[in-house]
Image (cartoon, rainbow, N blue to C red; front, side, top):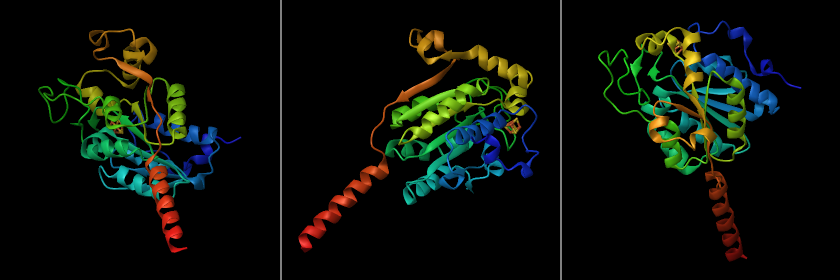
Amino acid sequence: MKSYKDYMLFNKLPHTWCAGCGDGIILQSIAAVMAEMEIDKHDIALASGIGCFGRVDDYLDINCMHVTHGRALPAATGIALGNPNLTVLCTMGDGDGATIGGNHLIHAARRNINVTAIIANNYNYGQTGGQYSATTPTHSITSTSPYGHVEHNFDLCKLAEAAGATFVARATTYNPVQMRKLIRQGIENKGFSLIECMAACPTHYGRYNKQGDAAAMLKRYNELTVPVEKAKNMTPEELEGKLVTGVLVNNPRPDYYTMYKKIIDEQSAAYEAAQA
Ligand code: SF4
């Protein structure tokens, strides 16, 4: 039986994240899922973007690519199409995956590329000093909105659903057991999966918005969490500001590679028949 430790590079520790950062919980969850599924580490590839969570690949003993800001999904797409036998993961933060790379997110979902995207959403660009991103809630204080953020924020799960993602789920770092379960379901979905992992950034977002220390931020996640089944019986007003967790979309359809391969096979057969 494998352990999450089999997928970790312990010689790279201690990590560079701040004390209380949620990113480490997601890292452990990813490694634990790979162990639970007993995936051979040579059969996994991970593309990771820039940012605090993007550094997750530093600590994993699997095939990793650390790519330019916002471009992790194109790299993951190339890997998934180049070798469809691999389990392909793509790790990004909200600044990287939803803001700079937001366009890639919607098109990877639309194409149904067989990739599991794991986005750590902490509502800001942590690594560069706490600037607002596309998921920063309106009125939040960040280093670039010191008097309150005026933009409307993306609900990443709804965005992915509208773009055509076949599996969409949300978890928080308060509940790593649920997070592991959802990441596993995302990997098992043959197509594009988005797992939004709410992760506290106490250094910037928490401090600017007076949400207390890391423990207080975790407690807050618990208070805001509404399981998806319960949310079905709540009004939009009751759900305002809440974090609906669980499987939000599970709507399988053939992935991009399968559909493209079918056309190639059909056309090859037609060509062979014409030559006979
Ligand atoms: S700045 Fe925020 S997101 Fe980055 S490591 Fe520190 S706590 Fe985590």
